[in-house]
Amino acid sequence: MTTSHADLPLVLDRLTGPPLASQLTGQLRDAVTSGVLLAGERLPSTRELAATLGVSRTVVTAAYAQLFAEGWLEGRHGSGTYVSDVAPALPCLSASGTPVPASTSPPAPDSDLIEMRAGIPWAAGIDTAMWRRAWRHAGTRVPSFFPGPYGLPELRGVLADYLRRGRGIAVGPDHLLVTRGVAHGLAELSAALVEPGDRVGVEEPGYPSAREVFRRAGAEVVPCRVDADGVVPDELPGDLRLLYTTPAHQYPLGGRLPVARRQALTSWARATGAVIAEDDYDSEFRYDVAPLPALYSMDPEVVVYLGTTSKTLTPALGVGWLAASPALVRLLAQAREKVSDRVPEPVQHALLAMLASGDLERHIRRMRLEYARRRAALMALPGLRGDSAGMHVVLELRRPAADFVAGAAERGVGLSTVDRFFAGDPVINAVILGYGAISGSQVRRAVTALSPLLPA
Ligand SMILES: Cc1ncc(COP(=O)(O)O)c(C=O)c1O
Image (cartoon, rainbow, N blue to C red; front, side):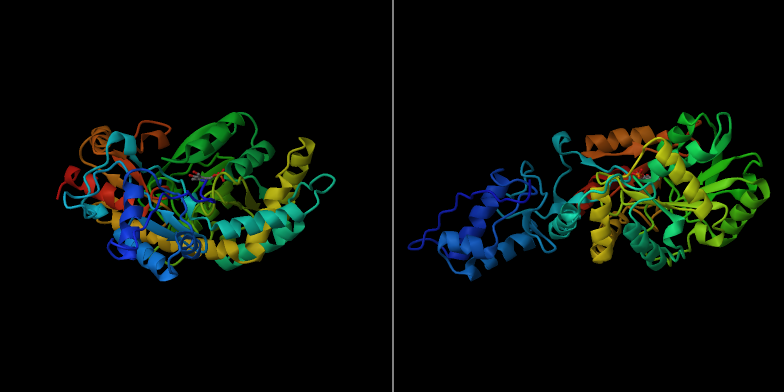
């Protein structure tokens, strides 16, 4: 829990001790390094702590400022002061008692593994005030008799605006279906469109969950080669019922599909009768490149667009959306009704509140800056690719990727190879470095730990 703060054992000596601010700084620093205060715990506000200790607020503000500068504390927008994730168990103090900057700390031990998992966002970055506002709103709404199969009409309205502003997609509410996320949308799409034995193309390497969803629908999954730019339309078979693709940021290699290939892709779909499922999972996080319009907006009749809050907020929320022709949306909604499936209404109300208030877009802007900082720190490593969007990059290696993963683990960094993203034999020797779920200081520590493993 980060909403309440610890009772701190602080005793200030007003008569004989050093200045109160430095006493307080020292005692708080000791509380962090000894594990009395744990990473993620919230500190009292300066006003509260000043009142508890009977000192002026300036004393507390000065102590917090010093500990901020040293990296022991961090602020979260609008929600207070927290102990940063500098591990208490690390030998972070030099012999003289002065803190060692995180970037020069030795690699973390096993118990403090820095897990660079792909695709997990920084849930700790969610502003608790925004989150509470959304759920307070959801809590005031009386549940409907039975939720409609399309999703809340107001939500579909604000989603249409969101997609227009953020992705240049011009849709009305009747083009939109609220889902529980991309995987749910893909499952409904395959239930409606894919017959057992149909051939469904998935990028190779590609998103394993997408492959699994199509397999469950009885499809024959056909690996479709990708290169550094994304899927290669010229090589697509002519007999696919559906093609799953990630044009904004190929998952996992990170290519951004060029316009000519986008055109070739929609022409291929028109010529063969295939449907394209465009997974736009993380395009909100884009760095140093202008956005390309979604594939959907190039040809809405052959493309189904899938979006999610799993990257912008958290996969724990379980809500997303799908844009398609109104006829297909109707078909999907009818199919949903037949199996009595639904998207929980309180979740929809919470998302509606975050969208309508502008909170979600503010959160995305803040997280974009945060991820951009982490990405910039990570780019100190040579040879990374796929860095124009999202929250992971790929490192192609000359030596076996599994050896690199083992070497990284010995140095306290958890990585995975790209192997699991291949349906067939992996043809690339690479590892994934995810920076969504680790803090900036962990990214810097990971860079320090991994650098010696890479050729200069
Ligand atoms: C390529 C890709 N698409 C979509 C998602 C999210 O899917 P969902 O909305 O089902 O949580 C992920 C999550 O890891 C992903 O990697």
